[in-house]
Length: 207
Image 1 (cartoon, rainbow, N blue to C red):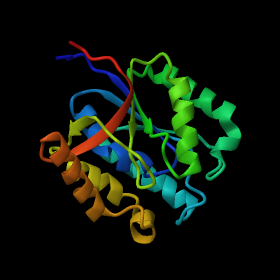
Image 2: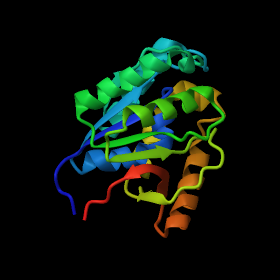
Image 3: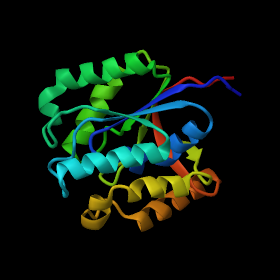
Image 4: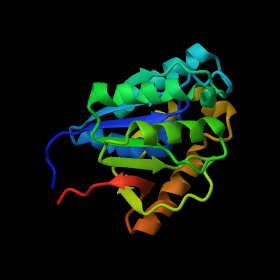
């Protein structure tokens, strides 16, 4: 078992994306002593809620998970118009935090920002040995075969999502009941209590 602390980077297009996709996994990383960084590409300007409030919510959620927060400053809904800036931003963050493990959106997603971030991350992380994609409410065709047991971290994930008060109140995509049902289903698939699921883009096993 690898006992050396790792640097973990999670990339998401909007505030709350990362928490929904891999919040429990990040909480487990932090609890095991890994350094966790969340790179949020936009402020979520196009969604419900005041931008400054959403920024505070994201800061609270990141702190709840034990993660550092980096903002990308790109426009919500138009991330694909800034492909080169996006790739360079993710590359520079990977270098800065010396990421060993990278999590990002799955490419098969109906939201254009999610797809753009996924593709840019796969390019930016081309030299990383562990790159995994997570699911979101707008994913389609998501067929995971890597799972993380988050039974000990599911409450922490729920607490992080509750920090996104504007989204819990006004967005159908952020539903805490669905969170628990999904974690239970992924746990059933992987033969554990509750789980988060991933599709690996690259995964070098430590043996």
